[in-house]
Each structure stands twice: as C-alpha cells, then as structure tokens.
Amino acid sequence: AAGVDFHNVAASDGTTGKCLVMITQDAERTLNTFLGVSIDISFQEVDTKSLENSKWLYMEGYLVTDKARTDVAINAMAYAKQKGVKTSLSLSDPYVVKVFSESLKSVIGEGIDLLFCNTDEARRFTGTHTVEAAANVLKQYAKTFVITRGPGGSLTYDGHQLIHTPGVPTNAVDTNGAGDIFAGSFLYAISNGHDYAWAARFANAAAAFVVGQFGTRIDVIEYISLKQQFNI
Image (cartoon, rainbow, N blue to C red):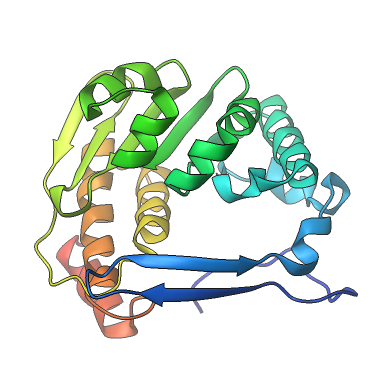
C-alpha cells in the first residue's frame, strides 16, 4: 500500500535478529541489538538488477560493525557507482563512528553523492568541535550532505551552499527512528525533483511527527496531514 517493494526476500536457516529499544524520559533511546542471521549476508544476496534500476542506493552505517557486512557494503557502493546509481550513506550512531570510522571511510571510498549524519556523528567523523568546521571537512567525503540538529533543525549542503533549516516545534517523547524518517523523506523529495531546501523542510516536518509519539512510523492521519501541508 505504501509503494514499497521487497526483492529477493526468502526465509533462511538461523535466528532472526532482534533489537531492544529503551526510551528514557529525555526521549533519547538506547539500543541493545542482536544481529542474528543478518551477520551472514554476502554480496551474492544483493539484488543487483534492482540496484541497477534504482535512482539511489541508501546504506546505514550500522553495516560496518563486522568485516563481512563491511565488505558487502563496499562492493555494493562500488557496483552502484559503476552503474551510475547515486549513492548515500547514514553514519547511523556516534558509537559506530567512534569505533568504526575507518570502515565507514572504506565504504565511502573516493566519495559518495549524499551523506546523512547528526551533529555528534559529524564532529566525531571529522575530528572537529563545531558543526561549521565539520561541514567543511565533510565536503571531502560527499558531494552533498545533511547534518541533523535535533530541535535545531538541519544544516544542508547542496553542492553549492550551506542551508540552515529550522526545526519544527514538537513535544518529543521518543527520538527513535527520527533519523531514519528524515533520510527517507529527504531522499523521496529530491528523487521527485525538489531542491535540497524543500527536502530539508519536508524531512524536518516528518521527523517532528515521529518524535512526538512512541514508535518509529507515523500513522495514516499524520501521513495525510504531512502530504497536505506540502501539497503532495
């Protein structure tokens, strides 16, 4: 119903991965993750035909927490670039950046089209102390990027200029999934011809809906409201 297709999905032997998410009163989340059978993925399981026919390849930085999945990520990025598919990556988590920074850089290779990160991730990845300094360094790794800033909105680089987009006021109760829906909304917007400034406003609004509730997905009523707000 949402227009999402699943390719090459089949049951396999092994234990399904699980993630325990704990939300504290400040709306922040702590994850306790068991990867399960997903740790056994190989490049042979990548649907290369679907990848070739895609506008974008989007990857999570969580993939680089072990060598096997890092290798898959590196190969998938290289394949996408070879086929002219635009590439994007989320740094995913400050801890991932702290421990696996070199693996992330290996996945990025000579550069990607779009990088997503939050303020902490940006500073850790670049070894800088301010968002502005981090933004200057990130240009070495990505043609464009977005630094999300929680209630402060986002800082976007569209390849020509830095764009400051204010956040959407909301009563945050659960920030889990905010970065995911931001990235998905942003990619949706630019894939449909909108510029980066519009995409940032749209993604900020979508993320505000998510953090104002428990759970990582907005409900149908909020989805309709968001579409009406942006005349989609």
